[in-house]
Image (tube, rainbow, N blue to C red):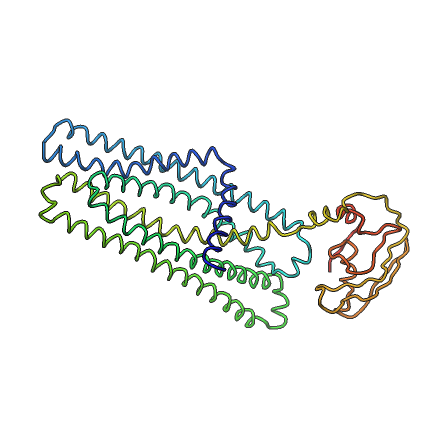
Amino acid sequence: MSANNTSSKGKELYLRLLKYTFRHKLVFIISLIAMAAFAVTDTAFAALIKPLLDGSFVEKDPEIIQMFPFLLIGLFLLRSIAGFISTYGIAWVGRNVIKQIRKEMFSKLVHTPTSVYDSSSSGELLSKVTYDTEQVAEAATKAITVLVRDGLTVLGLLGLMFYQSYILSLGLLIIGPVIAIFIKIMSVKFRDTSKHIQKSMGYITNVVEELIEGHRVVKVFGGEKSEKNSFEIVNDNNKKRHLHLAFIQGISIPLVQFIVALFLAGIIYIVTSEQFIESLSVGTFMSFVTAMILIFAPLKRLAEINVVLQRGIAASESIFELLDAESEISKEVSDNSNREININFSSIKFSNIYFSYNSSSKYILEDINLEINKGSTCAIVGKSGSGKSTLMNLLPRFYDIERGSIHIGDTNISDISLKHLRNLISYVGQ
């Protein structure tokens, strides 16, 4: 898949994911407003440096000297309140997003056809409900927090820098596109690595679950060493995937910071030259430098959040793949077999049954004919793997037969809704 197609699919997945966030519009909007207020405080602090230095230390203005402590207290009080509202509000939205997605996933699993369970490991499905949903919530909430709050902070500080000295700020027009291109390239790598991490988590969950469910068999047959080896393989694979992600992240973030540091060093060199040193006041210079220093932290978080964002997009692809899969209910509606019928319980009849788990594979059941009359008891006996359980799984339509028919009385079970059919059947597992 090309980078453009990957980017387009990523946007589509993320927009679909944000629909869950927008279900809580009021709290989300309040949180965004609080983020904006939080972002303003950094720019305001850098802007206050100029009147503080020029008015207090240079011009000795008593009004500014007396007013500044109160401005500082008010500024950080606003910052504290806005920070709490945005952090708690986004956390509230995030947990509700997780709850809703898990609810939809569980509902989907309840109605998932048996064939899907046969082809998917339970560990993989468990990983989707537990691990993947957490990654998705971070992308839908934490990522937005950083993008909005730190994005606005960066924009505010940049605006202040251009206001203080547009000549010194022109260098940003050069490094901005360089950083943007670099982040776009790294996004693809982050997402691919995140997909591998999700799969490795599924493998770990599967191995652990198999041990828990089959611990008696493992102990009786002395399979402890084999199980340990299996877990070591999947555990080591998970470690390598995480380290690969850390390696990419460890390279990308320092590179972005180094580019900004080069720009900062160049600016300081230019500002301290004879040409500029007399044209700028002490307050303007320090306000400009303070803004540049303050911009480092939000830029770092913006670079780091790309990892969270790509991890969430990769997880959402896995989740939506499950949610979009065909369920027994949707299949039943498409077959128009959703009506209840009065059943004549005279017999259960299997006629010319052919069945295979894969249409291209050999038939498990071939030309099976069997009739069980009302009031009789029937035992189906055969060696392991001969198709006894398969035959019984056809009656409640865990699987649909390829050829032949099953009738209860005069009614073909394909004409009965799944709910009504299964209400007629009692089942005791092995």
